Amino acid sequence: MIEISNLTKIYGSSEQEVVALKDVNLYIKKGEIFGIIGLSGAGKSTLIRCINMLEKPSRGSIVVDGQAIGSLDAGKLRQVRQKIGMIFQHFNLLSSRNVFDNIMFPLEIAKVPHQEAQKKVDELLELVGLSDKARVYPEQLSGGQKQRVGIARALANDPKVLLSDEATSALDPQTTRSILKLLKDINRQLGLTIVLITHDMNVIKECCDRVAVINNSTIVEVGDVLNIFSNPGTPTSRSFINSIVNKDIPEEILHREALNHGGAASKLVRVSFIGESAGEPIISTMLQKYDIKANILYGNIDRVKDTPFGNLTLELMGSPALINDAMSFLQEYGLEVEVLNYAGNNGDY
Image (cartoon, rainbow, N blue to C red; front, side, top):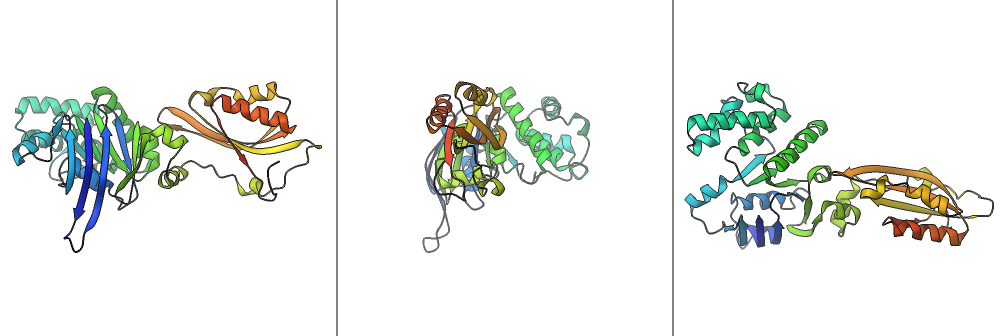
């Protein structure tokens, strides 16, 4: 649906150049929710504004639905933009118009017949759950309701692509979840391609299929959200994931001395699981199969979109050979097993 090749955007003159994007290459599939995450100033807002040509690239090409948009004249570009909806962080609603008329506005610009436009607005109000707010003005709405109006307005011309520019960053967590659920519902019902930029990994975790990580104007990693969560390939990706997935062992556990287990060996391990394995009794099966004991010291579980993932910190006790066999058993099930050290000791147990 969207193919970006060697995209570069430079601001300023040759004497004081600011490189906002450098040799960006991305392919966004039709019908997916694609996330772009980066810190402030990384270039993500510039990238999304280049997709609809609100910013003209310095070099490179952008193809949307088979059409190269960089070389279009002003008239044809306006036609293409009608099929690229955009929702904004600060809503950008017209305060002098009520909810119905805010959604009607892009249909008026497109010269859609009035009766047809009214029917379309009614359908969109129902889609975003605001049918009872049609005659209310923006100042009377909550932040989440304003964003729902913004989403409905962005959908007015039946776009093929919906761009979301930090659309939830001004909202509280509960409202953010409701807006992300709405975007997922729209994606499923309309088959709409959604490109979503954010600095919050929770947003990516909640609704995206794939994600691109941008750092210092460059794409540093692209992949399925689940794969990047389970095996981040760059320090930037790891820092985002660590901000929401706690793998740190509590200090009181890490700094304690290993307990005396009557001469049996012990080993401290972290077991990470994802997908179907999260719901299977693999740990109990391991304990039944091997003559060892396990002390659960710490654990947590979360979800990436609709897939569970999490980790357990275990102290495995028994003979060294059986402990190693048990760890191999876990790995055969596709679990990641990492051997840890107690901070107060040298080496593993």
